[in-house]
Image (cartoon, rainbow, N blue to C red; front, side):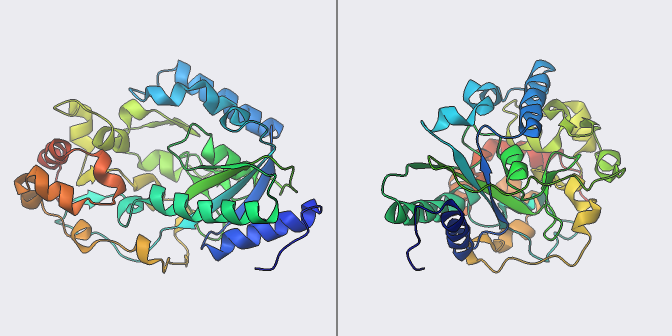
Length: 316
């Protein structure tokens, strides 16, 4: 990409988004700190969610910096928000354990981080005085709210970000920047009166639109719950899920379209993840799990948790 005039906010903003697209990101957008009134409302909603105990044991969600992006980078004035499509037109067939789609390929934290760092280094070449910081969802940032603010899509009633062209099968990343860039228009919600996700949740975890109670969520319990046994109500509704849950996304009408598929090698499913049997999950020792989950976001699930989840799973 040719050098751009750093004195022009419009040109730099357009070039920055173009550079992000070269890394495979789509959609991309820019927002300015401190954000619009809607961003403030999302921040207030986070505090209400915490106060209601919906975070379960995820104490890190209460980090004060999560409610003020400016604390993550001194002098931050803008944020580049990016999405990375992970959808492939494959399904886990009946008789196999189910794993959430986001984890079928390489650890998205590494993929997004590496690519955004290349964008950041390009930005430094254009404007040496600009500072930046990469944030994936492991950083204390309201990632979906900032993506919505930057026009990537809207937060659905299941709390996932939805893009009208790509649905909700995408992971997010952000680049905090100390330069005031040209912001995009925030997205508006297109969920309308649809409540498909709320009605489909087997544990009634979506307590009201946009409010997911982690204490009832299959994804939380299969990934974050460190207790030796899952709660009876979760076991009764687990189905074949052993790592995350895609039910609320599977039923979303915005995902029942001719969606673009990712061609990224990093995001193609590992074959064994689509054909994992209960017998395998119970028989693999810790070393086997370590080898199978190398460079996977699923390493967060300890081997004993895989076995716990597999024992509780209800096979088709």
